[in-house]
Amino acid sequence: MSSRFTCSTRRLLSSSAAALALATGMSLTGTVQAQAPSAGQQTGKPAPTAPVDFWIDIANDRAFNVKTYLAKGVSPNAVNGNSNSPLLEAIKVEAWDTYAVLMADKRIDLNQRNLLGESPLMYLAIKKDLARAKAMIARGAEVNQPGWTALHYAATAGADDVVRLLIENYAYIDAESPDKSTALMMAVRYGHESTVKLLLDESADGYARNEAGKNAVDIGNETGNQRIAQFVIERLNEEKRRKAASGR
Image (cartoon, rainbow, N blue to C red; front, side, top):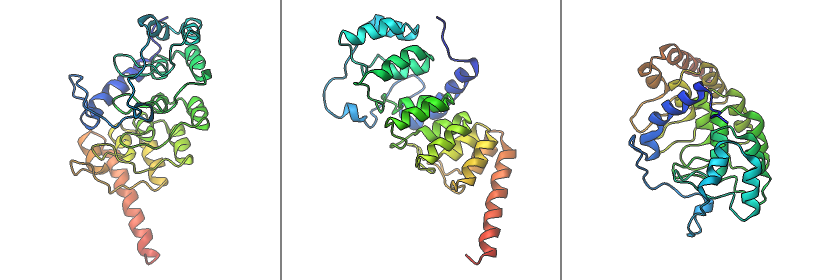
C-alpha cells in the first residue's frame, strides 16, 4: 500500500519541520539533542525495540501481521530508529487498520513521545483528525505538556475543529514552545486567519513575544501574512478600546 500522507500534509510537515527545528533541538541535518523524556522514558529502562518487518507491516497497514507480532510479545510501545512509537508511525502514514489494532492493545502508552517531544495526539492534531483526537483524549491522552503541544500543531495546520476540541479540554492557550512560540504565532506564520480569529476569541495573548522578541504581528509581517498581522492589530486595538470604555 502506498504512503497515505496527502501532498498538502507532506508539505505542511516538511515546512513545519524547518520552522520547529531550532526550537525542538533538532538541527536541519537531523541531529537530535536531549529532550525532556516522556513518562515511558523516565523509568531508566532501555526502550523496547521490534523486528524490522514489524515496522514494514505498519508502513503498509498490514494490521493482521502487526496483531500477530503483538500477540507474540512485541511491545506496542517499541521505538524505531527515529524514536517513534508504532502509534506515531501508524498515524504518520495513515495506517488506520493498524492504528485500531494498536489502540486495542491494553499495553499501549497514549502519551509516549519521541525525542522531539511529539506525542500521538500531536500527530493527529496536525493531520486535522478530529474524531480520533477526541477519542484519544477521552482515553487519557494528555492535552498539555512542556514544549511543543498538540495546540501548536493544530494551529500550524489550521485545524480549527481540533483547536476547539483542545481548548474545550483545557489546553493552555498561550503554551510556549522551547523558543517561546505560541499557537497564535504558529497560526499567523502559516496564514490561517480563521484559526487566528478563533485563538483571539479564546483570549490568546496577542502581545506575547518569542525568544527572538517577536510577537504575532511581527511574525505575520515577516512571513508575507501582512493582512493577518493587520487583523491582529485591529483586534488588539479593539480590546484596548473596550477596556478603556469599561474603565479597566
